[in-house]
Amino acid sequence: MSVERSRNASCIGPRGQARRRALLDAAAALFVEKGFEKTTLSDILERAGGSRATLYELFGDKDGLFRAMMEESNSRILGEMAACQANSWRTPEEALTQFAISFVKALMDEEGLAVLRILVTEAERIPAVTESFWKIGPETATQRLADYLRCASEKGYLRIEEPTLAARAFIGMITSNMMLQRLVLPHRPIRMEEVEPAIHVAVRLFLDGARPGVEQEGAAA
Image (cartoon, rainbow, N blue to C red; front, side):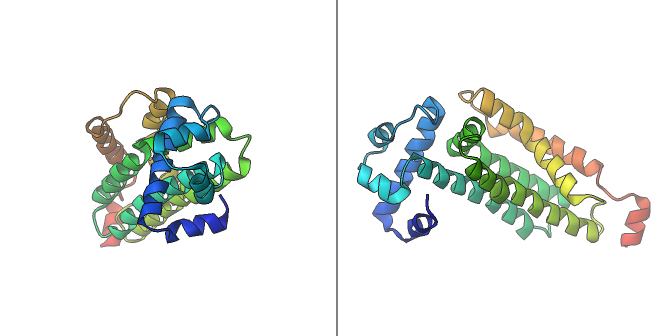
């Protein structure tokens, strides 16, 4: 999808937005069900309704649909990071737990799963798109979490010498098992009531290794 088409997406009216949403939802579901390569524009239009002219106007082609899905997925992830930063006044346990739950929810939807599966299977064909996804999404999210951890360390709440490495480790703790299951077993549902206990364990383990010792607490006081 061109930059101009991406900008124009925010300028269309309510009916156009509804058509755009329907096309994105249909594409996400079909990409999961049939795979990116086997899904045709006709398949998407049959499920979503609308015309080829509308699809071409909004997205350009199937790759454009995927780019739009990728941008939305990244926006959701980064939105959760912003929520974590906005609530930096909370205790580290509250802030990280809130972030982890919201972050995982953003990764659990069908569109997010479709994006990840396409990136895995199509990486060699669309290297520029996958590189863009990595920089805009995971890399930026890691850096924002690192900024939060650095700030918490400077205030004496935590003791973290390498915030970026710590951010990567924390994100890995809360997502690795879930993402592996989602990629390998896409039709097996994951329920938040199963995920949340693992998140609480991950947060406790992470903070047990990052809390300041007695000497640091005294210095912070």
